[in-house]
Amino acid sequence: MAEVALEGVGKRFDRTPVLEDVTLTIRDREFVVFVGPSGCGKSTLLRLIAGLEDLTTGEVRIGGELVNDVEPADRGVAMVFQSYALYPHLSVYDNMALGLKMAGRPKAEIEARVRRAARILRIEELLGRRPRQLSGGQRQRVAIGRAIVKEPRVFLFDEPLSNLDAELRVQMRVEIHRLHRELGATMVYVTHDQEEAMTMADRIVVLRDGRVQQIGPPLELYRRPANRFVAGFIGSPKMNFLEVEARGDGGAGLELGLPGGSVLALPVATSGPAPRTLGIRPEHLELRVPPAEEGGGLRGEIFVVERLGAESQVHVRLDGGERVVAITAGERELVAGTPCSLHFPPERAYLFDAEERTLFPSPG
Ligand SMILES: Nc1ncnc2c1ncn2[C@@H]1O[C@H](COP(=O)(O)OP(=O)(O)OP(=O)(O)O)[C@@H](O)[C@H]1O
Ligand SMILES: [Mg+2]
Image (tube, rainbow, N blue to C red; front, top):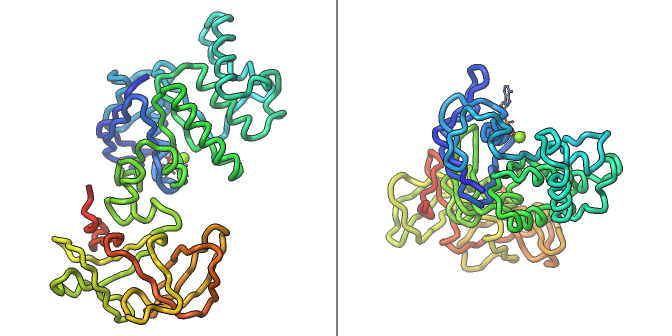
């Protein structure tokens, strides 16, 4: 297995920059997830590692070896695509064996490798079938099996689960986890789904418009996002953002003016630029109905209640007109139009400056 190191990697199509100055190291046996919105360059970055695209700038090293000019087949990587890309006229066995046959491996070795992969993926009883006789989840396993038989140094996955239904996605997520442990392999996984990123990754790389926003373990990104973009991208439902006006330090901390005219005192210390945006995660807002008598918190009225069973997502319209979402216990009686107040522990607040950089909590 092997480490993957990217140094100053950039990619332009014609003259349009798609990736700029990407520098990061994926450690040996690490599971790293590239996540970001559609079009941010995730697949392109993966394809650059695979050698399916040429770099415009920078260097890619796999296991310490510079591979800029090494053919994809000689890089020791195997890629799994969203589309499965199976041959319809070949059996599952032959789909998995084809690459090894083409590479001229001996028949006994091919058989041993295919059977081992089938066993790991629990598809031994499917080896004689054609792809059309398989469910989506089974096809995806075959596609992964085709990567496993190559015994690559690095596995590259490009949104492998996005064609599957929600239940199967969760099941395959767990399977890929297990596979990672069992194979002890370096894996790079691309998704636009922050939940997949959070649950699968040792470390997440958040991309936006071809640039790395932050790299770190899931909970580190959740707790200490580097900027407003990462704060809004990691976590579901999304973080609430309120535009605020810093009223100077009232002695005990910050006083923030909200658009409705109310003032929120936050006993937290920041230095440097003035906060422009307050962020609060829905799971950190406590909903009080009727509103707290002693004042404080954010005041408004319940607007919509989305019941999910275990929890409800309550949309609240604040007195200043902004909307925020709070999570509450699922079976709580709540009626739209009811006045309420929202409260949160100050240490759970996030503050961002005019450039959308995080001021609080101070980034790691
Ligand atoms: N061969 C190409 N020629 C020109 N532009 C390209 C090419 N491939 C990708 N792009 C552009 O590069 C940008 C990044 O594309 P990429 O496929 O890497 O995005 P992505 O993050 O994987 O998005 P998605 O989540 O939709 O798959 C997009 O703006 C895309 O239009
Ligand atoms: Mg893509």
